Length: 168
Image (tube, rainbow, N blue to C red; front, side):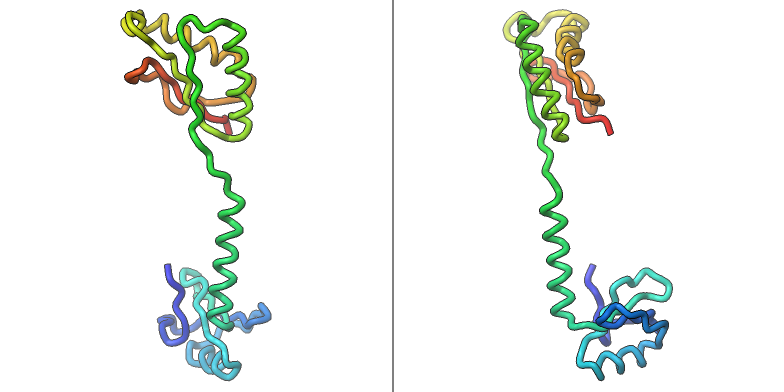
C-alpha cells in the first residue's frame, strides 16, 4: 500500500494533523493543500480507510524515513522460530530420553517447533503401529513444558514422527 500525497489524494475532505501532531480538524482537500503549500510541506494521506481519511502535513522524505525506521525496529524485535529436530530409536534408553526431553523443553520455552522422529531401520519399519507410537510417547511424557501437538503421528521415509509446539 502506497501513501497518496498532495494531488493524488481523492477524498473531498480530510482530518488534518500538522507536523507537530496537532489536530487541525476536518478540512476540505483544497484548504489542506493550501495550508501544506504555505508551510512548504507535503500533505500525506496516512489512513485512507478512516472516515473522514486522515492526512498529515509534513515532509514526505521525513515521513518515509520514520516509516522505514519503524519497520526495521519491528523486524529486529521479531524472533524467527525454526523447527528443531530430535531423533530417537526403538531401543533408546530411559536416561537418553530424559536428556532429549530436557533439550526439547528448553527449545519449547524459546518458542521453537520440534519434530520428534522415531528412526526405524530394517525390520523395525514393519512393526505394529501401536507399539511404535508408544515408543514415541515415552519422550512426550518426559517433556516438562506445556505443548500442543501441531502435526500428529505421520510416517516418513525414516520412520514415524510427530511435531509439537509451545501451548499458547
